[in-house]
Length: 185
Image (cartoon, rainbow, N blue to C red; front, side, top):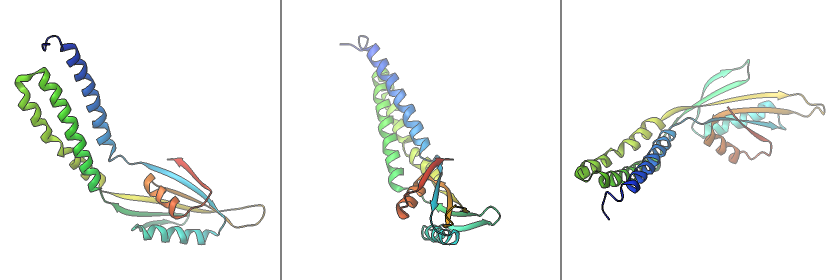
């Protein structure tokens, strides 16, 4: 078989590889995307008790109190999110594999430029650098605690926490109440 007989196969493989590269590009870009969600909790305890518990939790997670809005019963915590070495290396390896596949397909289509195509693999550390620079940021957690009135007279409190979804998952595991309601923000 000659290259002329395989041209449709090579071009279709090239198109599929390009589509995979587009997906890889968006995957790398999404690694630094902010994913803020909101959860609500109705607790059967006093406002002061719940507020103290949540403040202690966030202080223990290296968040510092940044602002207090007493009128709206709102606290703002902030902390620095560190990037993950594992994810930076993983994204670099994925980019290298994607560029290797693209280089292989292009070298079959244009054999005279094979060496230039394989030089593109040297661009793969840019994915790790992109993640590293974008993932290191100041993260904010918004906490609102409001008392609720009930017919029975029991103390009920509504807590609304707005933060990154991973932080909210950690909060739900650390404080396992049955009445967490998750809503997108």
